[in-house]
Length: 286
Image (cartoon, rainbow, N blue to C red; front, side, top):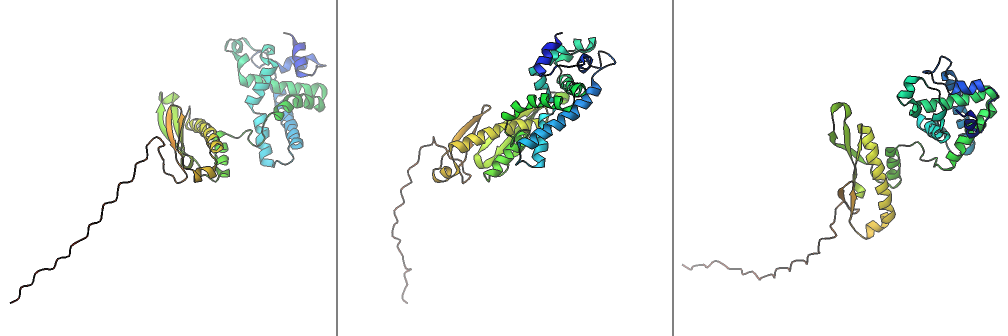
C-alpha cells in the first residue's frame, strides 16, 4: 500500500503517519478505527464548503446556499471525489467487508474521505484542511450552475413551466410491474399546453415521477426553442413527439390537435335556394 501516492493526490503530507493509518481504517478492521475522525471531518467539511459558497455566490440567498451545500457534501458527491482519488485501494477493511466488496461501497468511501479531512485538521490545523477541501471543490463549482444544482427534475420542470406561464404538469400511475416487494412504477407526465405526454419508470412512485419529469423537461425545452410562443399563435402546426416508443400530438395554442397529414377538404357547395310557393286554400262561394 503506497500511502505516499495517496498523499500526493490529496496535496498534503502527514506529519503523523498514525493519523493517516487510522483515517483509512474501517471499524471492521480493528478497534482503532476512523469513526471519530469522520465525525470531525464532517463538521470541518460543512464549514469550509459553506465559507466557499458564501464568498463565491454573493447574490444567492440563504435557502439556495443551504441547498448547494447539502448537494456538495452529500454521500454521492463525496463518493465521486473518493473515486477520483482511487481511495478504495488504500482502505483497511476487515475480512468480511473485503469479501462483500466493501471497498466499492459508496458509504465507506465517503466516510473515509471525511475521516481523512478530520485527520488533516488534527495533524496541521484548520487552514491545511481548508486548503485540501477547496482543492476538491473549486473545480466542481467552476462547472456547475448554482441555480439548478441540487434541484430535482420535478422542481426544475415546475420552475421552467412557471417561467413560461404554462400550467403545471400532472402525474398519473399508469402501470406497476414486478412482485410486491420489488415493484416498478410506470408514471405518465402530461403538459397539456405543449401537448407533451411522456413516461418514466422507477422503483417508487416518486422515482418514476422524477424520471418522467426529466424527460418532459427535455422535450419542453426543445419544443419552445423550435417554436416560440408567438410563432405557435400565428402559424398553427402539429408535431409528433415520439418518446419511449409512444407518439403524442402536440396541440396548438387553442388546445385543439391538428393532423398535418390529412388533406384539406373542399367546402361542400351551398345548396341552391328554391323559391317557395305560397298557396292559398280555395274558398267556395255559397
